[in-house]
Image 1 (cartoon, rainbow, N blue to C red):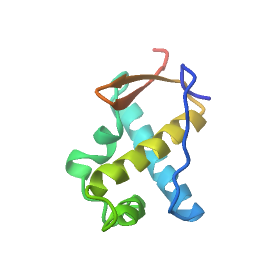
Image 2 (cartoon, one colour):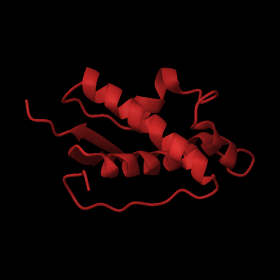
Image 3 (cartoon, helix red, strand yellow):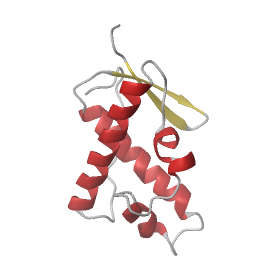
Length: 115
């Protein structure tokens, strides 16, 4: 496990295994970009896939939104939760070590690199 503490992982249901793998690969790329360009800075799913990256059309993340659309009152929030669990899985499977903390119900991560 690549986190500095014991943690719980959850699988995301309602998407295919292929969609799951594509999402995880996409998130892994986002993590690598963050760690390269913002070394020692904390990040969360919101940092990687929110703000200017809010619209998931054309990305592997779209099936998470579509899964909740029409079923839940807030499909964006529910898709974000699913994506957060997948992000945590990606980080736990990474070869590098990450610090983690929880603030205001949001899980944050930081590459525990040695400078």
